Length: 559
Image (cartoon, rainbow, N blue to C red):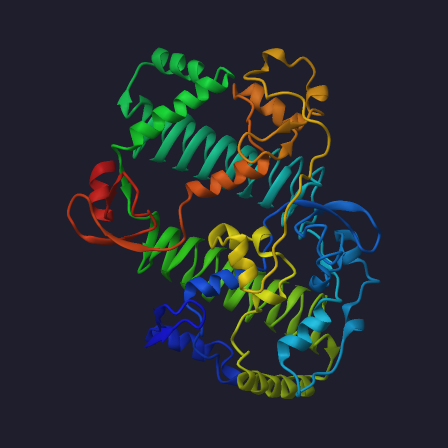
């Protein structure tokens, strides 16, 4: 079946397998209709509900100024329409906060979204989605970490700074998508690594730097596509002495030395081969950065999943369509689903909850429809309590009402998002100009410097002129790329000094965006294998200069 996107006008396909899923999800009310938007626009709509900035904001209950993923301007002058109320973790979890007090009856004379957001905008939101952290006040959407700073999607980590999606790791700085690793810098997709720097897509590697697509390598520099190698430079074996000498030249603390190494690595990679996609132990799957997956299609950064499509950043999940971040089963059109979610439809941040439809910010709930901020509740609609029979009867009637209004099966519209578009993950994956955003009727926030104070000269080239780290961490510098002001934190300075790394000259937020650019787009295009000519799907852009190989040809290169 072919459909035309109601927003972009692009054609997209609905397969028989898709239809079976749409019939199965919410099967007790006749399933959901086929999507009105193409996958790209559906993704944009969900990501517009997920902030990407780390800001300081006052708790609207106790007044404490804490880290937030909601900019401080929201809900205030100029952004009153966002209607945002935020509570710090302590206030949100307090027994006295009971969101049932915002409950109301459903009005069948009005559209669902209009009624839901009229209520939801009054219900306090968790200010950062971070809990159970120690000495890690400046992180968002993170849990059970210690001594971490300026991180997003961080779990069970120690001493990590600046990055996204780091799991069970220690001493990781300026990196994204790292798991079970210790001591790392400038990493993009690394697992089970130790003391690895400036590398991309590395597994079980140690004491190495400037690696691309390597596995099980130790003491290697400027290498690509190696397996189980030791003491290699530029993919050639070298002596221990030569390796150590080159390492010392690079990691001497001087910015010029590291930049020269980056340029050398970039030139080396122009002649290397690249797999069309990173698919590890997968069956009948398509996308990029998939591992231990079966029948997972058009998906990215997914592991240990089955029977999913149009998903990103999820793991240990099955029977999911159009889901971004985390985990669950039988999920449809959700962002930040779970943990341990089941039967969630068009919802966000429903922790340990099942059979919840069109809900926001839940904790341990089941059988809810159109609810926000509830904890340990069942059989509620618009935050109002019902009996079991009343709930299922009313839910069925509301679904039919939403079918008539065209709302059923559609995720929350972007215009209801509390976020300005440019401070969301949508801007990262589906960027638009200010004019385009305003033209679509969405919000835009003109950002200001978060750091105050006068700048004091340029960032030194090395640590030679720095006598007092405490004093230096109070200095204000100007980002060489964005012009924004920024500071260093003492723990960050210690890491750079210990491992012979120079001080960055760009602000942390700019460095983080640079990491994302390394990962490429999250969409597939067709190209031909550079060796055999077979048609393959890849996320590399048309301007990519390296050799793209099909799986069969790439395995010949690495083995």
